[in-house]
Length: 235
Image 1 (tube, helix red, strand yellow):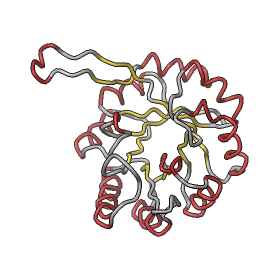
Image 2: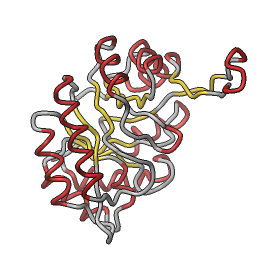
Image 3: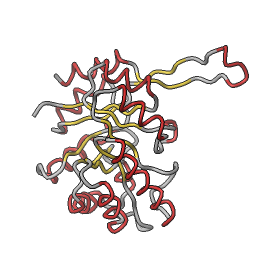
Image 4: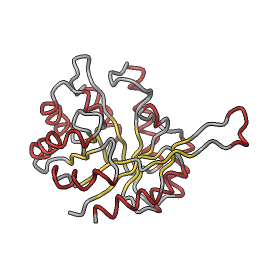
């Protein structure tokens, strides 16, 4: 199996840059500075119209923790239905209970809404009290992959844990390392973990446009050259 790179993007220019750099898949979100939330209908539709890559949409109604109220779960199901209607390749989701375990019933309802879409369980996994137990629960749900930093701020700091999770998964689910992955540490992660898929943002800070005046602000955008560098390391 060839190694794959997923790029997390939060805008149409970033999605196009990910494609230009040779990424294999996109995770689409907004508000990336706070870990990402569900993108707008308009952004999803336009990315699908202009990008040929598989697009997985983040289903997260707000920043913060992953214990959701019934109302928030209803919003998440509605967003998943929208992604199905628009023709997305998949969704990225996760929900926990107050004890830090996978919220099995809540997640099952979300997966039922997803139907034929691919499903990635996101970094709510890194907030789980017991990752080995959580992995089995996620496998039971029927997710295709888990995005994880191995419980550390950056995947490069959890190489042994990531390798252990991949060994435990034993081909039943993909373990996709993510968080802080750059060209300088990707080769070591490939060698030490045995992972087949990797997740990065490959972003750079774009200075504010002075023409924006009072509302000028810097913006993080995916850089096609950074994406291409990562893709080359996986070749």
